[in-house]
Amino acid sequence: MELYQQDAFELVLGWEFYLPLLLALILIVLAVPIWAVLGVTSISMLYLSGVLPLSLLGEALFDGIDAFALIAVPLFILTGDVLVRTGLSHKLLDVAEALVGGFRSGFGTATVLVCGFFACISGSDAAGAAGVGRMTIDRLVEQGYPKPYACALVASGACTGILIPPSIAYIIIGLILGISASTLFLAAMIPGLLVMLTIMITNIIMNRIKGYENATQGFSFGRLWKAIYDGRYALIVPFIILGGIYSGIFTPTEAAAVAVVTTIIIGLSQRTITLADFPKMLASSAKVNGVIVPIIAFSLPLAQTLAALEVPQGFAHSMTSMTDSETVIILMMIFILIVAGCVMETTPNIVILSPILLPLAQEIGMNEIHFCIMMVTSLGVGFITPPLGLNLFVVSGLTGTPILKVAGKAVPYVLAMLCVVLLLAFVPQLSLWALD
Image (spheres, rainbow, N blue to C red):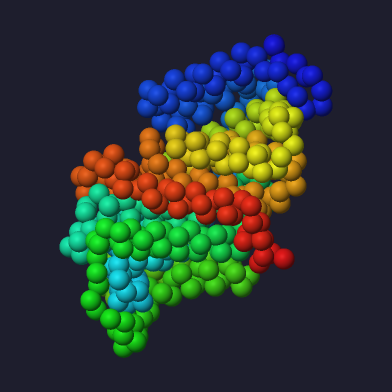
């Protein structure tokens, strides 16, 4: 084996590390499912390096996903699916439109706001892009927005799905790093809202420049009250989730379970869903969950192998030996995360990169909560950035708009989110104020 230790943290890695890495890149280019790529990489790296027994793989696959916190993932996904099927999502749009629809570029702003509402319930950006896109894209086009821009607006607004609690991304990173998801949800409150407001402001600026929309209906307290009253059942759901978590009444998993039961009871009582809809809802949510959980399962053995090879410590040592500037190191971490988010999904990025980058962050004195917020927000940029750009693919699939056209219109939102990432990275109190 060509792996040897130079000092306490610096390592030189041989082909037992680089060959599996090269194989992984080839498989990704060949469009092999990412969970399979991670599995092959883990097995080959374990076999070639011999740092851990191969029997670890089977044990790690089951122990890694045998976590109470992960139960929240399918429950939040199911809650979002029930919300759409019951029509409650339309009530949330009515509330958002009543709040901001009277202003110039009002419906575009309302679209971003309802993405935020949806994020408070489903915790998934792709679900938000699909659910909100079906409701708003055609209406945005009617208001005067070009279809590619309307798609880009929805895709960008849906990025709040992994940034505003209860985010599935924070549940996963909390599980990997041993941090309470409730603590991360509390820390993510201001950053999530900041991203949403930045996307709103960017749309307002673009609308001023291009003149896409000019709302003529003024703000009305009567209209707002009616929308809130009609949408009272829809508003109960995010109140239960966030109120229960922030007050300490529920854990995130318990809040997800209560939210599912609440939305189902509302749907059955209003007869917007029936018992015959249950198999479809469960199957739809299972498909999404079936993508996430295998990725987590196969990422964990790889993360353990990298830890056994002391890759995180070696990486941290290499970076700090290149420069002693905290600013440069933070910028390098952001660059790595954004590039990773452009080519790979959030879940494997979190499972693989968070244990590698956290020692580097701690080396420069960054709080682990602050690091998690910076990491998830940086990865969020990848949802509207090719070549992966998951949200771009979702809205493109909904409307038939070429993905490159949508990506071109999303550039202002990418730049806006990059500004927020830098702000969060260098102003830690935006993430830590509530914890203090």
